Length: 310
Ligand code: ZN
Image (cartoon, rainbow, N blue to C red; front, side):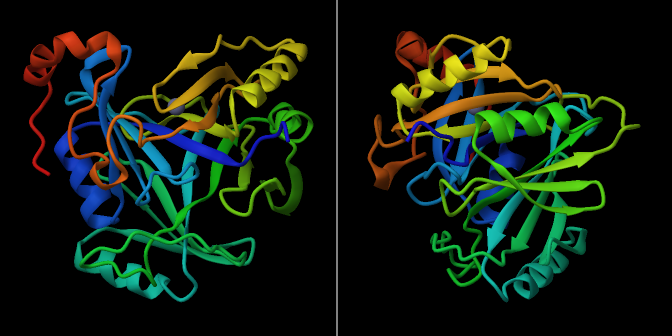
């Protein structure tokens, strides 16, 4: 295969951990599939939200920093996360957000009806009634039945002063094709997977650089099957003269990071080994998981982390 399999996960920055947890699990109905720490800063949580089993293409992750300063969307950033919802479910979400006093915009892009809103930290999200078939099961909860539940990523919007160099990474390295354009918004798609297969490039020549802090996205991770594909992708990116990291073990996947020419931090992440390595699928996210290097410090780390009511 040796190709990118759509989106793997997206990582963003949040403020208060409890508020973040409540919004994503209760308001949106996601499952916390992993509660761990930032491997580079173990006094900070790393939350992974996704579907029931934490499938790649459904995973949104956060570093919650209690007193983080407010970030700002701008050029050189992923500025909107697009999730797929079932056809006919937009009315449910509209009513739900109205009852919860969450403001939103209704819109249509590329022939798809969508609703955009912000999370409590100001992160932009959009739920989209996709015109493509999406056979993924959403996560059912008491308030959110499966026929309206969010299924996983549909697209991600990258804002750029000029899309050319980023588009070349997508098409020449990742195997995407441009399939549509509406004004300054360009849609790219990979045929390698059925879902989480889109990237939208928004070209804004005058846009200022974004400020990467609370309520903004930190990086976008693309998916590969295994470490062999990961390392062959590394060769391709180095061959273009871009700097890319060594392979990094993130416990639940193996990763590489590079900054694409438009300024956005891209990651490439493997399907293996997945989230059910240190806890069973049934218990995903149920207790704090620590990587080997921090296991001996568990008591100290638990004391430093804010308490979370689940
Ligand atoms: Zn990541």
